[in-house]
Structures are given as structure tokens and as C-alpha cells.
Image: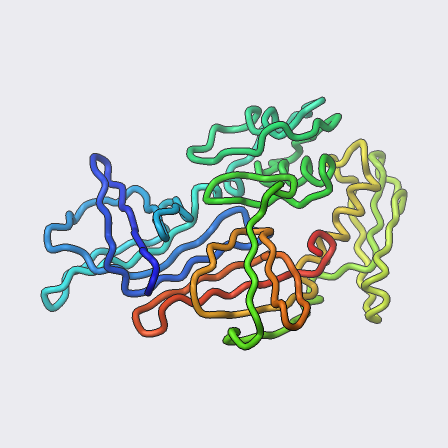
Length: 311
């Protein structure tokens, strides 16, 4: 496959490396706070039949995934030992943990993370701007709190760099990859208007209907009318209009996208620059899927979104 693949298994008392990969699929996505991994590996005959606590995927000695097993199975068949694995990265805990209801004031990302549960492996961008408040309300997840903070602090929807780092601003030195159209396996363009909202009307804190109203022109220009009526959102208690703007932009996620598939492994991460030079295309990597097997080798597929948060 021209690249070194290593899966490290962590047991309760030891670690084991597997290097004989049969197939794998790895994915990261702009609006999803975790990576996913699935695949199959051949194992040595002395492999231990006991509980596997976590898995780590390395490509060319760089860790790109560290997570717990969603499903893992070790079997012996016809004299061969094979491991089947499915895993989400530990940053998925940001979605499954809730914060106690409270308001934090003059808070940056470090303080925001410290106020919630301690999550193993997860790290956070440092020296981020302060905002005057973040309000936890009615079971806010750790991730939703970070989203609310990030949109107000930097205007950037948060994302995961590497295998564990929560970022709320654009990396100062992102990676890049350049190819030409003759090297592409596939190119496509798509649209998804399933979540698009044209107008949101929100009650005020006292319940007065229609106290705050905002419209989205990109919906009406596509001859779509989808009006939403919502109660007052306490997560945006001091910025109801900013909250409406966020909700409209959120409804636009992945509304338009370009997709490119090419042979090989590029080592791309989210928000890295992706260029197809001969057609003048420059975008950012917003979804990355890497597959590998003995027959086809590595194939990388990149989605470049065009919506309210992505260029």
C-alpha cells in the first residue's frame, strides 16, 4: 500500500501492535466532533482473547485516530486469526456528556472546558478570545457549549484537528495538497437543501411571540419557504439576534459541496487547503474519507463544503 499502517490495541495491562491490514476506512467531518475507524487486521497466533480497551491508528507513524471500540471481534477461522474493529474517537464524549445548568462569564475555551467534566485524551486550543458569557441550559452538551462559545468568540464553527484537539479558530499553518484533474478517480458536485430554513421567529424571554425575526436570503432565492417558530433560547440569552443568525447558518450546513477522489494517502486534516491546479479549484477539506485494501491500495476522498461556515 506504499504507506505504513499500524493499529495499536490497548488491553488493561499491555499494548499490542498489528501491522497486517486487510482493509480500513477512516473518516473525519467538519461538523462531527470525532473520527471513525473500521477495518480488519490479521493477528499473530499468540494474540490474546480478552477485552480490548482502546485502539490507535497510525499511518506513517503519525497517530490519526485514538478511540474506544464501538464493536470489536477477534476470531480464529481456518487457522487464521483476524480482528474486526469499529471505533469512534474519544472526542465523541463531547456529545455524550452534559453540563450542569449555569452561566459562566468572561470565559475562554480553556475555562469553558475546565468547567465541565474531565474527558480523557481530549485537548483544547489555548489562548482563545474571551466572551462575556456562556449559558448552560436544559442539559446542554459539552459540544453545544463549545459551538455557542466558538461562534461568538471567533465566528468559526469548532472542529477537531489531529486526533484530539478542539479548535475554534483557523490553524495558523494548515496543511495543503495539490493535484491535477488527470490524477482524479472521481469528481462530483452536490447540493443538500434538506435542512435549509428561510425564516426564524423567536419569542422573547417573557413569551411574546415574534419578538425576534430573521430571514435567510439563500432559501428564498431557491424558491424555498421554511419558517420556524421557536421559544426563547436561553443559550443565547444576551444575544438573541446572534443566536438567530447562528441557527440560520446551521441550517445551511453542507448545502453545496465539491467532492474529489484520488489514489494515495495525502495526510490531509480538516480545514487543510485542497487544490486541483489545472481547473483552478481551491477549497478546504471539510470531510475526509480514507480507504485502503490490498487490491486498490489507498484512496482518499475529500469534500469541500460551501455554506454559512465554510468557504
